[in-house]
Amino acid sequence: MPRVAVVGAGSWGTAFSVIPASNGADTMLWARREDLAEAISSRHENPEYLKGIELPPALTGTHDLEKAVSGADVVVMAIPSHAFRNVFEDVVPHLAPESSVVSLTKGIEQEGLRRMSEVMREAGDLPDERVAAVSGPNLAKEVARGQPSASVVACADEERAERLQGVFMSPTFRVYVNPDMIGVELGGALKNVVALAAGIGDGMGFGDNAKASLMTRGLAEIARLGKRMGGNPLTFAGLAGMGDLIATCISPLSRNRHVGEELGKGRKLDEIIAEMNMVAEGVKTSRAVVRLADQMGIDAPIAEHVCRLLDGEMTPQEMVASLMEREAKPELHGIEDGAEDG
Picture (tube, rainbow, N blue to C red):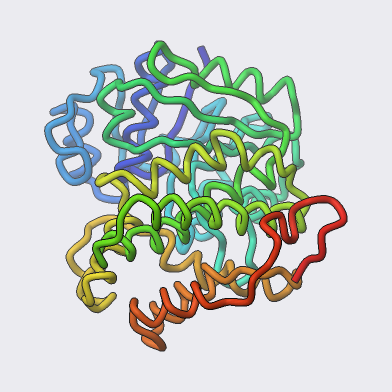
């Protein structure tokens, strides 16, 4: 088994590190805080993000980034998108020459509108074949508890993708490969925006018809933008698209759905965020999605309305009314070959 370094000891980084460690791989988890790294190593628990969940004794925590990354065959990045580039720039000097770098982060960089794989390629001057991404319906607490789940690893290098598949596959975590990096990453990032909208509907007391309609049209919005950016539309019907969208929109464990629910109840965004110790990527991603859609000439009404609500430009009630009263269009608008975009 290869040596694995996971950079970022939040809920998802910690939960994911359990998989290779349980498979017998030498796995080290880097935490920004020394006390958290010590708790992971000595108490086999992450009391900050996964309290009460026992971590495998083989998993080692460290506050020393060089110690974590040097000599690792696989370096997994689990850092929020707003800090991803800065942390990865610190990782780069310690990378082994042929190591694989893998992103778990489901977001889009605000400044350059880059996907995380693009950030890693740029910051590390890395070839495409060394860069991969993992995405799917993977709620951290369920994965950490060993509940059945499935995911996708995407990489331009098919052989490397299959090697990573072997490292991350476990009796409770089934991994598929997909060469569509664009689709896999965009599916993971954009579904968080739809989850905010789904949560808003929950907060307003809407039922299953509303949520099913919102999720389906959200998936169409994701596929429309993803196709224009070069993704395979079939990817959005898979684990990194529909699968992740379903889990994030319906689960009480979903941070983005929770933020949306509180917004739907009429609470202010700043108040909601202040109560959380984890990042809801959809808040920042929604603005990036709107900018991407504008650049690509793509219709993204759900993201646009979420942004307007986040910016205080409309109430939840006004958001719903505006979305429902939009001009009628064909269902496959902007997705089906030959259908008109915009």
